[in-house]
Length: 284
Length: 310
Picture 1 (cartoon, rainbow over the protein chains, first blue to last red):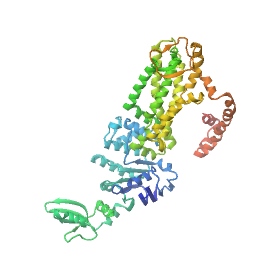
Picture 2: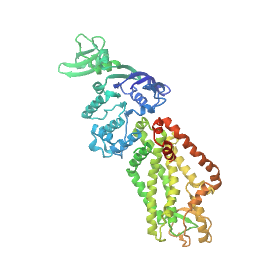
Picture 3: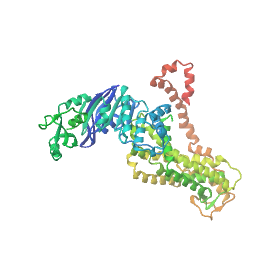
Picture 4: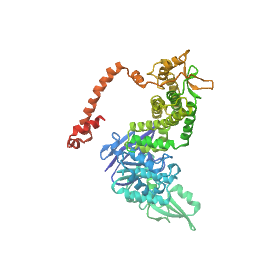
């Protein structure tokens, strides 16, 4: 299985491109899409999920153009949109049975029971979805995306609304799933991607800034991350001059993590970069 | 839930009938059925009514139901596509292999199921009211219920289709569609009064009038062909001699497809139609790659033919 994206673009208004000249190739594994709000991640996800048509470029699934014949991809696609709702008066089983039928699955009940167990909703399966919390609905969304055991799984901000335990559970699930399928995971939370992604694409303002393995991205900021000790009164001045990825207030002052090509000052100590540093460096 | 069409219809139907708004319209249907059954809201001829025969009560309630559920029911069911759009479920559906026509058919059937449920309540109400009225000792269920099936249900199918179609057409999605339906409904209701043609009569008024006319002429000396449907007061006169047996549906069918038409185009279509089945038999197997499976089966053509025909 192979997904190729060639020069994808999406024009929303006469002068506004939500996505522009986006190209990448990916095979089995987790591809993490990182970017700030408005970077074009959801636009890209909707195009990849064949929900929205691209204004420019094309997408190939195993060599077939999905713009011309989307059903080949749709049959093996699982999609969890960012803004996803439910029919409030159906219970989880009824809702999943409905979506299973829409996806053309026969006798889905066993699969539904497995998925409800996987997302820890077996006990609440017969309660109306209208009474579910945000996190529970999100788990129903994850279950529906996995109904047809998809070869391409597209999940847009999947951990939004999940508590830390569920988030960890979902990360582990994604890692397990990624072995024999392509998973595209979009988020703005670096730690979510760091834990599972085999490749990471960083986006900003509709453009692809970088696409590499986590190690490759970390190499891009090697020897560029510094820890600087400054009095708290000078923190603002430091932020104005340099890219500060994090700060920690301690008794001796503020320990600031600065990303810069050259040492920001004499006392700066070179430290190991993190993916968060690489992400901020790429966005700069 | 095998077929996507049925799946959409069922999920949509289940979601809607579990809402309070459905319960309210359901209760109002019962109230309306009561009003139609006891004569408060019913049909009349020349300011009189006939005996409460199965046909009279059935037709009366079915016409009222057809009008009310068609007009108000449109606004009840016209939100299911919008709900998919608003909740985001539509995005999941859009990413599935389901075709647009499947989606549209599912929504249509779901709309129809909601409207027909309300019609069903009124049909049951009509049976109850017939027993309570007690003006005729014997119930003929066909005469009582056939108006629901053959007069009201087709109009509700049209209403359900319009509700689904209006939601999918950009210009008719919002308030303009609501206004358009009101005027379209008024136009459809007034068609028979203008044209006096039974074939152009979605509500079936002209068909009922034509059927009632001979019985009314016999029972009411000064019958002026006046027919109305609405709220009645207590002064409504009962004509004991007016015992209407209902619409002769075979005659209506002949009117809808007169013999000349049946002999001509319909007969030709009936002859040509099997050709489409025969030609599809082999083509379909090639198209779906099942020809080898079929060809190696015993008596393949003989076994395949009846299944294709059905």
